[in-house]
Length: 160
Image 1 (cartoon, rainbow, N blue to C red):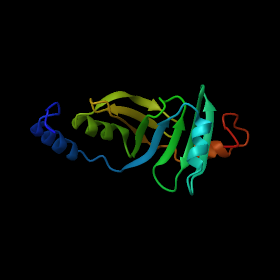
Image 2 (image 1 turned 135 degrees about the vertical axis):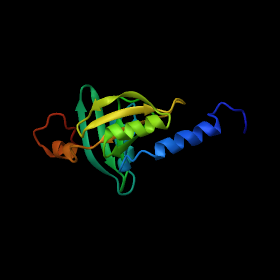
Image 3 (image 1 turned 180 degrees about the vertical axis):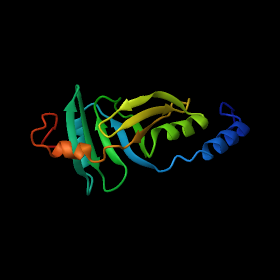
Image 4 (image 1 turned 120 degrees about the horizontal axis):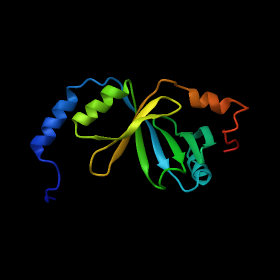
């Protein structure tokens, strides 16, 4: 149970107070980005869950990514370009800059970003202990669903 290795309790309290003093607005878990060796196989398994439905699936830049609505937030993203078995939580935030700054004040480190995504800018942050999360500022809501509905979109994977 003991064993140290963690941050000193005073440092934890100080960082927590500092992070709480920054108003970042809306923060919501939007996606679980799940790594897969075979997106199609994983998709079939996830769609077997009661009430699950495919929101979209695209193959582009050598990657196969599918979104599964499991009946509420978060949406599950299955991606063959992420390490199999890995899960990256992606949080929707009002403004990427202040949200990233608040996490930095709490001891998180920006590991990548800002990055461009179809929905808007994103950033990856690490806690220094191997945990990574992403923040996403959704500037273009529904863009992926509209692209999936486009019958002429060659990046869409049809048929599950």
